[in-house]
Image 1: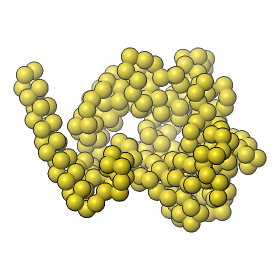
Image 2 (image 1 turned 90 degrees about the horizontal axis):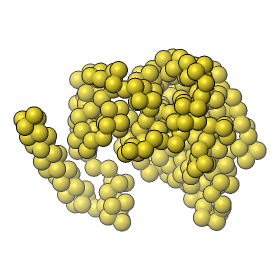
Image 3 (image 1 turned 60 degrees about the vertical axis):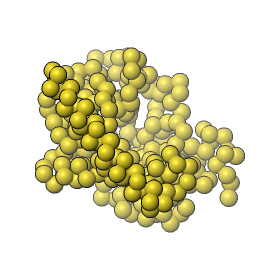
Image 4 (image 1 turned 30 degrees about the horizontal axis):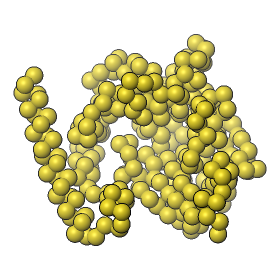
Length: 289
């Protein structure tokens, strides 16, 4: 087996895209390749070649794709509910192919994941990666995907480099098409976060998490926003429980080894105490106002 470090990064990433596509076809699952070499060259930044593989999978095919990955040497690093504020992607690693992010929906397009995927799939194009034909969103959809990614990538005092080629430098007609696609995929608020128009949605539950990314905030701000954005009592309760759940993968990265049961318990109580202290600090700020 070839070690991932022995293969030049751009070559390895293309080969990994091809390997994932082959497994998706084997499993009978539709996937769209996004970011990195899957993006139209005119929409990439100078650093936009990518270091891992990103795909959006048709939601109904998630389980089949995960089973295919598990059967061919891909191991889970983080699951869907521990990887981000949007519960959208599971992260995998393969000794030969490197890193893979499998998106069961795309952040901002989570109101109707199946409908959003179908909208992107219906207008898809294709590209050859490592001589394998891979489905990709068409260029307007690629711009929307990159803009939504930029919206959740904090860059204090600076504009994300993907904004210019995918929005500022686009024609007014192209921007209208991006807005229309955002409306079709339920990502209007997320697009507004990327384009500096989020204040139009101030106070809307859907905008809560995006406000944290745009305006800044600590972990308590993020979890509070996730609770406000969750739809219904059961979803809100789930977010509360997960706010103190220990992510064994991240704890292992911090410790430098697989955490023991005792270390997980210690981290759990540390998180509970930290959340309590943070809540007290936030309450004091409100009183001072």
